[in-house]
Length: 218
Image 1 (cartoon, rainbow, N blue to C red):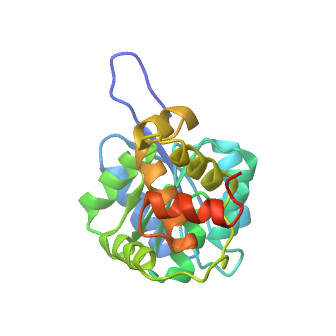
Image 2: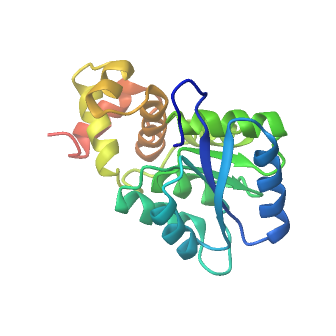
């Protein structure tokens, strides 16, 4: 983050995409918009991880399917390394097989490349503030996934999802969970969406009951 006394915050970015034309387009878009600075570009996942580690941008715009190394693995590695940068996935694909692994790996948001310019700028600002950003198409898919019955025990909960579920079991509100875990309320809701989908639960109460039933909650 670049900030000087008396000036507005400038959000720094790294753009990751295997297509030079896409990178050029995104660089041009953000360079021409006030309040943004593109620090660098990468053409695949491994290069992105190295670049982000060196430049420490506020936000990483990450493509998912790249020949030299995919975005999901890069997101997971950045999460493992404890990178400060928020990752906003920007891709052509909106299928469950892409969406859920990317968010599970630690992505702050997920937008499609056909998103309008203003929507993209707003999304990057939101991501820089740690808020979850999902395109309408992706959000509707996640909602459908939550409503669909899941295979019992088909997917295991992540450590953070277990933490969230344990706090829900104690009657903790989303706001209180966010404060307890030092994350945003939107991120709490995203974790709960994953918990509901994995457990096949329709609401908080059902999720807690299933958590006890399957030994997730002690």
